[in-house]
Length: 195
Image 1: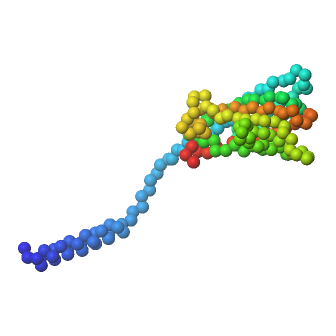
Image 2 (image 1 turned 180 degrees about the horizontal axis):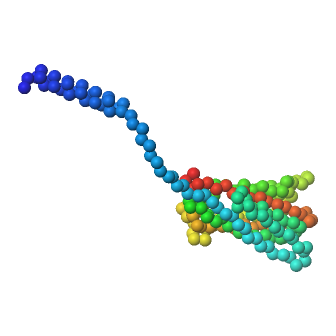
Image 3 (image 1 turned 90 degrees about the vertical axis):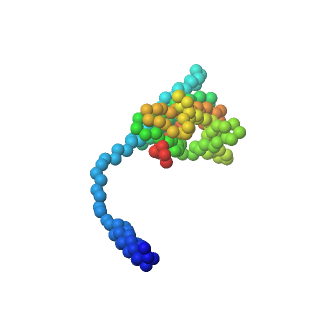
């Protein structure tokens, strides 16, 4: 076979393949796909249990709370608290949804003029009330986040049909003003587990 025929055949094949490739690359067809996407539900219900030790020689303190599962907050109020009152309890976070959730943050607000400082040395919160000439230490407190079935890989992830607990305690100090009342609101921010 002579070279000219071979070169011509090769050139014709290349042109034909180029035209076919160009036509295929510009081919367009609209494809409709019908289907249903089912996503999981993100639903956590907080609940609360509190207990405290009453001193026999003190006036009775009144401790109450309100739980709002819709808005993911717990509000606790303390009326007529007195020095050396110890309050502790559990906040239960029950995941009733179908996907794992991640506790991203807890925002705590308090009675006006009350603020908390983390004591690195003692590893607890010191709760102060603004007063002249200096802030007054009114309480110390701490909390622990734990799981009854062991800690998962992510310590703040709550699996479906599981419950995590936040255990807390507050000790009211000697410098507490007489007939003092305080409230705290804890708002939980939950995210999808993979965020």
